[in-house]
Image (cartoon, rainbow, N blue to C red; front, side, top):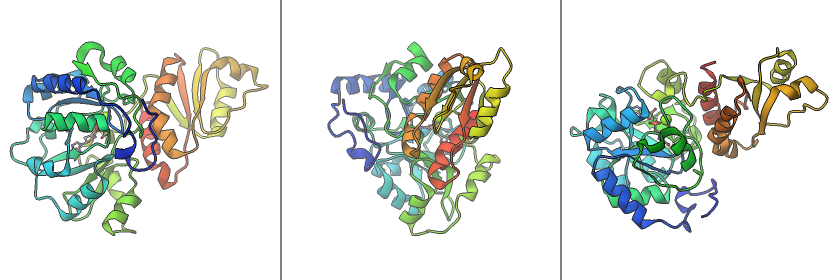
Length: 349
Ligand code: TXA
Ligand code: MG
């Protein structure tokens, strides 16, 4: 299997990867009979159900432990299928779909009348995405309908970026887990609400605000303000709940100096698992050394950092330290999506 690259056109990243057709066929059988199938996308693994089957959707919400009012994204094989799920598509929504699909972008559009309120959380809108992963696309093509798929993690927890994470989350509650290796992007899709006159980013992701504005010829328009509105409950986006993507261990987001002084001042009984951007020098600090169970030095490249983020958080979580310390990341635009996830993961503490 190829080691996925996260550069360039997502749909070309895995061209050599073999698709197991018999797995795809049994996944389709499970979906058609109302069961759940986990599958890889280029962002994170999805926990999929037939988006037209209310019983399957109920099962999906129950297994994920997700409140019924939170909508799920419907995954499609091609942008042409948008017509089956949405009405009154704006020109700019079509343009974004054409430019970024298949890829890590979700578009919020007005829903068609037949769409179950279980998909939309009772809202008049629906989230649609054509993922850029060959296994997801093979599954969607063979299924031929919409697959409702939230990230394959229990509600509020760290998303899954490899099949083993999905097994840890759901054990045997899922009929089939299609193993596609590690997800090349590593964090969830950028979500853009396209139902108003101008686009609104509801969740930052690897496709940046700048790329979206450039695609639409809107450079310079401050659409990011709407993320704040989403946080205030303006629109229901669970990723915009303050606590989300959280490890089980309490997590603090601190700058490097504060991490060092926290280690210096720590009382006995506490222990730490640490994620830093640059080397943490514990040589000569014997006390700190005994308190630190695990240290991970992450990449200083925001895309590589994002790729490893959830896997790193899971490793830190499994170290059984009493506290996770994460070095805060730069505030520049290219770190925006990572910073968003870290802030939410830390807000439980
Ligand atoms: O990358 C992704 O988007 C992954 C993969 C599996 O596609 N999926 C994912 O799904 O992250 P989930 O359910 O964990 O997050 C989807 C987000 C939620 O925050 C949900 O509220 C929002 O999309 N969403 C879905 N439909 C919506 C709607 N009609 N209006 C506003 N937000 C919506
Ligand atoms: Mg999620």
